Every structure is written in C-alpha cells, then in structure tokens.
Amino acid sequence: RNPLADPYVLGVSTGASLGRLAAGAVLPAAAAAGLTGFGDLALWLAPAFCFAGALVPVLVLDAVAARARRFTPATLLLAGVMINVVLS
Image: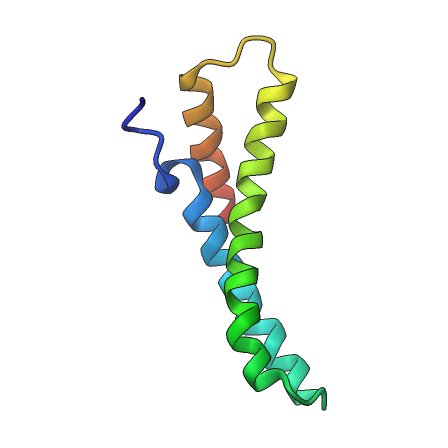
C-alpha cells in the first residue's frame, strides 16, 4: 500500500548485504582453517547467510511494532531508515 515501504528503505536489503559480507568473511576462513568441503558448501551457504541477514531487520521491525502502542506507517518507515543507517 505504501510505495515508500520497499526493502531499501526498511533496511532489509542492507541486512542481506551484511549477511553476504559475513559469509565472505566466515566461509573462506573456515576453509583456510582446514575444514575441507567448504568449496561446494559455500555456494549453498552464501544465500543462507543473505537470507539470515535480511531476516534480522524484519525481526527488529517486528519487535518495534510489538512494543509500540500505536504503530503507524510513518513509525515503520522511520524505524526502517534507522536500521538501514545502523547496518550500513
């Protein structure tokens, strides 16, 4: 309903980017530590890290909505922008 409520404004895309950055840091480090088999597994784990990273802002927005007595679309947008700022 609200054209401003897209993934870029709500911080979901930034969370997914942060998840991909975490995957890029964790998976090669695990392979360098001698854990074999991470080459093929990294292809499957990278999207999982992105999904988990995108899920974090959604859960934070849900927690903000649960705590607010009166949750308006403007509050949702402002909370999403603040999440976007924190994650970037």
